[in-house]
Image 1 (tube, helix red, strand yellow):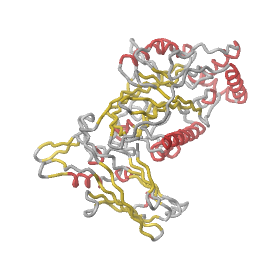
Image 2 (cartoon, helix red, strand yellow):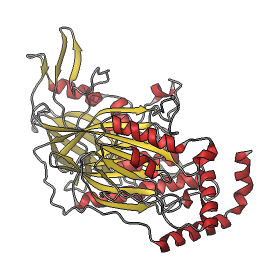
Image 3 (cartoon, helix red, strand yellow):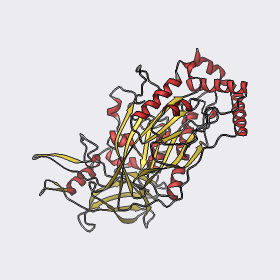
Image 4 (cartoon, one colour):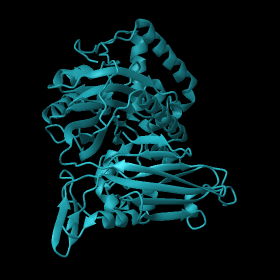
Length: 530
């Protein structure tokens, strides 16, 4: 309701006054690789994300995620190694006609292969079925080890038995783990081999970056909704300035942008403000001392709602892409997005389309330049809801190879079992698996670990929330490996540019026509205010 009301009032004032200037010009100083993926000789698609998290070894509580220690209780006390293994989770896309999958692991690549076998008859849930419920062998099968872990932890037992060394009451030291993949397709047995490097985590070169994502609720005419938006922007700026964030991503940075940036301090670089409603997307990025390159704004191909369903078609929402120099020779592809709001069928379909559009953009950029990737913003969707058959998970996690920072850090990387969070009684919004997300993947010989993740309700001096969103705060640790690749792409600092007079007229006329075409929803809109 708040968004719809503000949008309509904005148009009424703009159209009546014909004020086509943008009062909130950007600052004059505005400035503006990975999950390994390959095909085997037999065209089996393999995706490997780096880092084997602790829950992959065995389920247990860890007192400190920052220590990166793998611990286990034993009869003689605790023992540990502060060494992270590369992530052995994977996605295999098997060809049509597959009837059996066998995944094996070995420490020498010659003998003592251990693992498990999944048969279509024994595990029918992993295979696509036709309308009659029969397995459809004409369809390819996507299989993730995470899905196995949702039911059992055979690999955890396997890794523990392999890596433990009774002589030293700890874990043995290995440089490589060997994998063997076999499957039967149309009666033919096919076997492929590959391996994963391990490295000494303690000795690796590490670099931590503190990031925050915050929807600042800078909607025009918020006073009519009882909000002191100017004061809220100043309070938000004060919070962002005082907590030593390296990178800040904001959404709904619209009509009160000047109050936000004039009150914020300690940030040398920022993206170019694209304007208020109806001209801008409300997305911006600030960094303390990390140069922002290649700023690119992309509008969504599909959106839903004019006078209903969130009114997302009245503002050019989308995502902003940039390359950020995070230091230590590491460059990151950084994305800040704002997806469609509300829960109607049109909004759900629009979000599905938007996730796919973003995934295609990410894959295209990553194919050109292999770098670590961080995606943040207001996704307006939860991972645990599985709307549109889990479009968020399937598109950005499975297809694009991104991991969700909150789930990896707070739910041990388990994307399926979030029951313990449901029974807390706390709503997900702003507390757990919220719509304010960070997603990421390693790249260019740089591994990414989530060192910490927290949702924070930002309040003013009177204890009142300054936004209807919590801030999502994530500390990322970047680790250079022996496969590190120096950046060779020519990067550009994009200077500030203003929306042209013609663009503003076209944008206003475009939205006015849409409003006139959707007047049937006026009664529905009025009911929201009664």
